[in-house]
Amino acid sequence: MTAAAHRRTPVGHWRSAVEAALILSVGMGFGRFAFTAVFPYMVEDGVISVQQGSWAASMNYAGYLLGALLAVRMRASYAYKLCLWSVLGTALCLAVLALPVPVWGILLVRGVAGAVSALGFVAASLWLFEQRGHFTGAPVLYAGVGVGIALSAELLVLGASLGLHSSGMWLLLGAVAAVMGLIAAPGLLMRYTESSTEVSTAQAAIQPKLVAVLPMVVIYGLAGFGYIVTATYLPMLVHMALPNVHSAHVWAVFGLGAVPACFVWHRQHERLGTRGALQWNLALQAFGVALPVLVQSASSYMLSALLVGGTFTGTVTIAMPAAQRLARHTGKNVLAIMTLMYSVGQIIGPMVAELLHTYSHSFSSALLAASLALVIALICSVKLYPPTTP
Image (cartoon, rainbow, N blue to C red; front, top):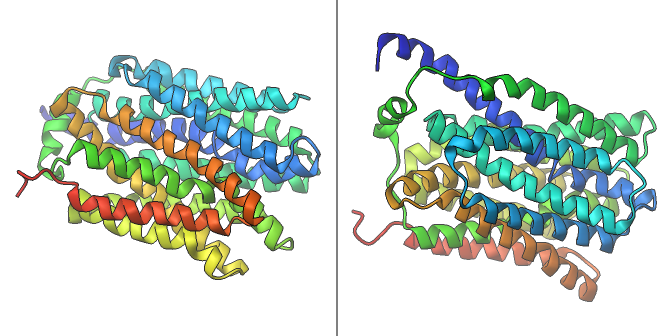
């Protein structure tokens, strides 16, 4: 690598990480998870029922599954275009929900938003890791999810203070999402001079050991099931159990916990390796998911939001770079395959939660089932390294 490239690499690559993080903030934080915080307001406005909200969540995860299937054949060279399209698609989906859409229309829009989110997630990851060769930017990239969750939640608090109904909140989210996309667009379209291959080679010395494909895919699918009940119902749970606590603030804690956690888990990944970091991550996440069942108080909900928010993006920060390194050895789009399995877990989660809620009239059993899935993933991590790995 030339001396000039050395000088450009830190600034250019960290800027790239921030630009990719903006894509995830919009596609994931706004496009996927903002519905969790708007959901109670939609129920209050009579736009949708609790059961229909569960259907909308499942449609979003089904759309995410479709997007992940399409992403399996995605080429890294086209990733920047899909990043831009995902932002545009997300902003449009948010704006459409501001219209007087019937329930079937809401379900359809949530499905499209899910597909767009999955494409944006894989595209942003491929663009940063392959086109920019910047694996050390992973914590910045995936912190974008938490930033998007926290920002969208606080925008909703602002909207509520201004007297906006759920439709106005959706329009506000759509407008801010479009602005964030415009900020990221110039960097995505810019041609950089430094070689991503050279940067990747320079980073090779700090890469953790390769993992086995099957255990990694299974663990990631179980992780998708494990966090999604909290991620779907946490504001609703707070609203039902503690009506005097503003549920959007709790959801903001969920997002804010994810931001520094990405850097913490990236560091633990380097220090402990993929298996060790995942084991600690899954153990803490399992406890965080089960915590509201053990103690029902404002502090327990806040701690649950902090623990789950601070670990589910950590799982991604650990697993996705490991998956992309594995892809370079296998020639398969492992990142997209794992995203696909994650989406399967996310689809099953709300369905199981709704079924258990029908019988028990409580989400406690669903939270325990999700926590159990994370414990099983923890057990599976014992087989994460291939037998030939010392």
